[in-house]
Amino acid sequence: MADFAAFLRRLDPAWTYAVDDISESDLSNHEGDAEHYQVAPYNYCACRRLFFTSHGKLGLGPAAMAEGDTTCILFGSQTPFVLRHENNHCILIGACYIADIMKGEAITEWQSGSTTIVEKVFELW
Image 1 (cartoon, rainbow, N blue to C red):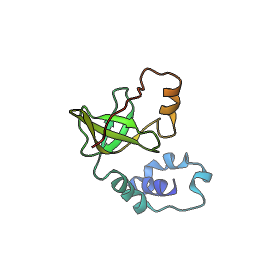
Image 2: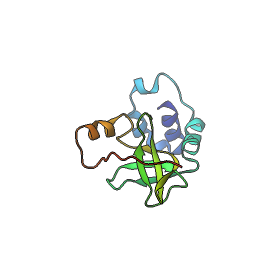
Image 3: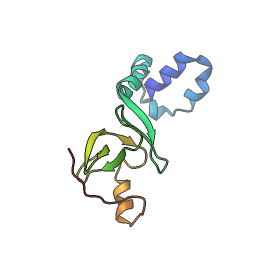
Image 4: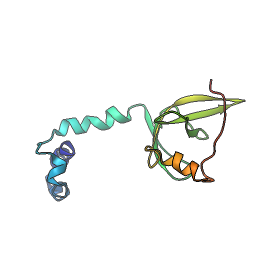
């Protein structure tokens, strides 16, 4: 948060009202490094693509993903994945981030009998 606050201050000093809303505990008595924050989006988003699931959840996935790909949680994994269906198998495109399902929420929803989350068995190539 301190790096973000420093970035906002450097971007436009008039935005100090936004920085003032960041609590002192969030800043951890650290002045912050605007350069560190400025390179963070590149480090986390390079070769990635923003997307929305068919249920309206925002995600960040591999640049190679395409419309029609499927997002899933492979049992035993900590991260959702993007799969592409081809013939009778699936190709693993890569890991992704999807808002609101990164901490087990999808498994909890599936266990409660949700109709939006479907258990499926498939072969990965």
